[in-house]
Length: 427
Image (tube, helix red, strand yellow):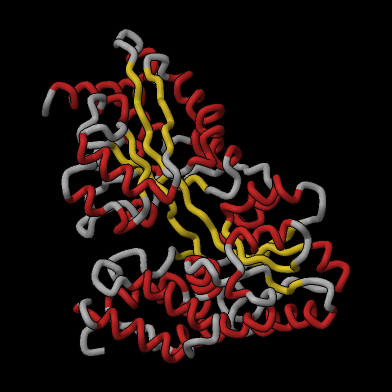
């Protein structure tokens, strides 16, 4: 073992056994600066004003510089920096296969020796692990998918949160018949919306969450199974309740329609909680409910998606300090800071954290009675061409636009997957 890794081991041992502040152990070292690469431009203030000062208070010799890139340019910019040797010490990474190649290329460090890994579930760690279990990212945050609604409209029209798919459609029909509001603030102009806020949000109960996702991977489940067909049929029925000309309604249009009080229901990821808190304020009350189940008494399932992790640049000049930061991300202190500074992004360590935001509490409460699963094509089954996740987005948009039947959607995606993925060949 090299001297630098012996030193890391000593630092962690001393902190754990003797309860010594790691900052004081390293205080004699020269000050260093760690740079974080991220696509989360919107979170810069929270990182700089809340999260990083807390870390730096423990480790006064370490400055951390959060340097985000706009999300649409992140992949290209990061790739250029990696190739040029100018990438930051810490790199925010998407889950599952999105950054796996970077690790396999030697661009990201193996993090299997971090002391804080015991604070995460095996499922959380799997999102940033290779197929044989090598870890290349520390779980940072998850997001949960559900439906937000204008509680004032619900009260005015005497509506209740729906439990089943039919109750959901009946609710939208009641709003439509009233005529004052758009029942469902959704459009299909941006392809990711039907895929992410349509299929991946509402489909989980139809394919039974993790059970269905894993069945696709091992080949025992198919996209032609009835659960997937029923999910697409449910989404197709939404067309009667979306805005006129919904095919041209963009993601920002949807947000504006809901936050301005013009719509009753909005398919929302928890990442929008803080955005809507600011935009809506006290204009009206907002409620939320999980995806409705296909039939009364059915099991609840939610898309509880591992959204972002933190990796270490294999070429960092400060591996000791970077590992200290990565270990701190697994602490209870970080979890509490994160959950309250960025409501709607849930820290993934197993620490019990009290969130102050009421909507965050609602979304988090679903985990207590619903099965949780990430987006169903992010791992393994999108490594070939056609890319399964991209195909799900494409065909779902066509289904919701009335240009493809649910059966055709299932056959299309299944044929594409079976053309290159061995466990599905011959299906």
